Every structure is written in C-alpha cells, then in structure tokens.
Length: 388
Ligand code: PMP
Ligand code: GLN
Image (spheres, rainbow, N blue to C red):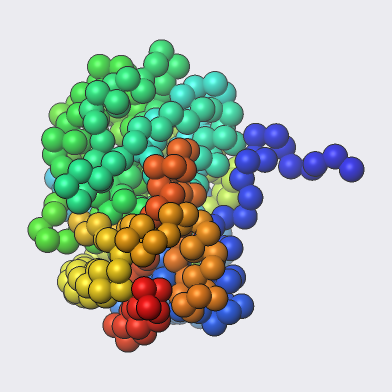
C-alpha cells in the first residue's frame, strides 16, 4: 500500500508535545514538557463559560467571532499598546493562535514563496508553511551573553526575491527571548525595504519578566499596515484547552485570513469567546498576579536546575527555561528527553525538534515552569539524581 499522507506533510510525525505528554501519563513522570498550567484561570471567567453553556451560548457564533470579543480585543490593543483596530473589519476570532497563524500563512503565502522564521521555532510554523507549499527560511537565534538573539545581517541575507512573509514570535517559545525595540526595528526595516508582510505570534504578550516590555511589531513605524498580529486566551488566562484566539490586521489582510479560516472551521467555540471577552475586560489584574507568580517560579526552577547540574538560560518571557545538558555529561537532548522519564521520572521537551539545524539545539532541553511550586520542587529533587 502506498503512503496515504501527502508528500508535503511526510516530514512531520506526531507532535513532540503529544509524544512527551503520553510518556508522562504512561510512566507517571512529572510533566515539565508540554506547556500547560496545573492551576485554573480566574473563577469568574470560568463561570461565564459555564453560564453560556447552561443558557443560550451553544449555537454557531458569527464566523468572524462574537462582537463582544472583537470589541474587547480592539479595546485591549488600544489601551495596552495604543493600536487602533476596527472591531467590525480588523479583528477576527480563530480557533486558538494556532488557527490564526495557520490561516494567515495559508492565506498569504503562495506555493514556492519563502517564509522567514526565527530558529528554533514553534512546531506548528513549519507544518503550516509546508501545507501552504511554501518554503521556510530559518534565521538562527543564538545565545549571546545568556540571551538568545539574531544577527541582523543574517536576517537580511535570508531575504530573497521569493520571500513573502516573516513569522515573528515574541515572547519567544522556546528561547524565552522578548525582542527589544532594536531587534524589532531590524525586523521592521527589512519588512519595509523588502515589502514583506509580518505575522506575529504574541500569545505570551503578558508573560514577561524583570521589567522586559512586550512591544508589538505593529507599533513600529510603518508596520501596522503590513503586520498580521495573532494572540489568544490560553496562556494569559491559564486556559490552554480553550483554543480561542484572534487576528488583528488591516481589513484587507483580515479578509484574506477570513477566506481561509471560514472553510477550516467556520467559527470558534462560542462559550469560550464569551468568557474571553469577559476576561480581557475584567481579569487583567489576575493576569498580573499570574505574571508575578511565574517570575518567581522561573527563578525557583532555574535555581533547582543549576543545582542539579544544568546550565540554564534565564527567559525574559513565556513559561519555559532552556537548559544545557552538557555539564551533566550528556550531548543529545533527544536521547536524554526520551530516557528522562525512566532515569529521573521527569518529562522535558528536546529543543532540537524546533530546529532545522538540530546540531545547534541538540544540547538543550526545555522545561516548563507553569506548575505548582511543589511540583517544580519534586521535579528538581528527582533531577538531582542525574549528577549523582
Ligand atoms: N504559539 C506559541 C509560541 C505557543 O507556544 C503556543 C502554545 N500552545 C501557540 C502558539 C498556540 O496557541 P493556541 O493554544 O492559542 O492555539
Ligand atoms: N505551546 C505548548 C508548548 O510549547 C504546546 C502546545 C501544543 O501541545 N501544541 O509546550
């Protein structure tokens, strides 16, 4: 029998998150792999979803999203970043950021077009670029003085006459970098000079530490008109299972995204949209508390990992830490991550799966710290065995 899967998807197997979370369930290991919190989001927000399910929230919402959520998103972009979007034509609700990114790439990249991504990159980017028949062009993020960054000359060199899009994720998963204004300016300069459209993934927009400021690329001069911004409810409000996100962009880009999204899923789950609108309007103080608690958890995990023998990179955002495994005598993060549940009863993500050049990331594993303190402590206790 011939392989049923289309050729352009054959390089993609099961996602690393599914694989590693299944190992965690099977072995009972502590799961610091897939990034999901082990505590609930704000109670009143959860109630809004429950109430919608109990009453009149169960039929198709409008394809572009509930007006209340589109308005709440427009308000959030205005109040937090000074960006104006018309909720009727410039905000569009998607099934998580994942579908926002997928429908943007499918809508904007022709087969054969090139799409720039910062490597390591979130796993769904490569798959949707392949689905579009486009070609990814990675630009490497390398540690410089403990922080992952890129060389603007390498970015420039990656642009060709076929380049159409650049995908920008900040705060960055898995590197933990929050791009500075200078880094964003370098990206904006290239976009303007080479007439590129930017698709930004800002799902960790609230989760930044040590005073690092999340700056949307769309706020830079000349960028609002060429940026499709994607965010979602999952990380900010600890509801990663709700899969409710949004795209903000000039109307012509939103129309393009709509043309694709409406045939992928038509609409996005109604109860979650109601609750997301409520949360954006009422629960930002809760998010600030989450941010602070994650900053402390980051420090707790980093301290423990260092004591256990890893070298760590202190993220300015997200809820992930990159750990270099070489001081413990390991060199292959894939091998270590696959054996870690047996060796130590802990699950981590081998960072090399986010690379086109695995040799650059082979010695890293990624640990999530969006977990209760006692879970982090128990994982550290177990990881100490590695050096013993
Ligand atoms: N982008 C990044 C960088 C992520 O880490 C995640 C995590 N799930 C997503 C997108 C997906 O977001 P959503 O669950 O809203 O689809
Ligand atoms: N964003 C989450 C992470 O990086 C995983 C999301 C998923 O399972 N697709 O861990």
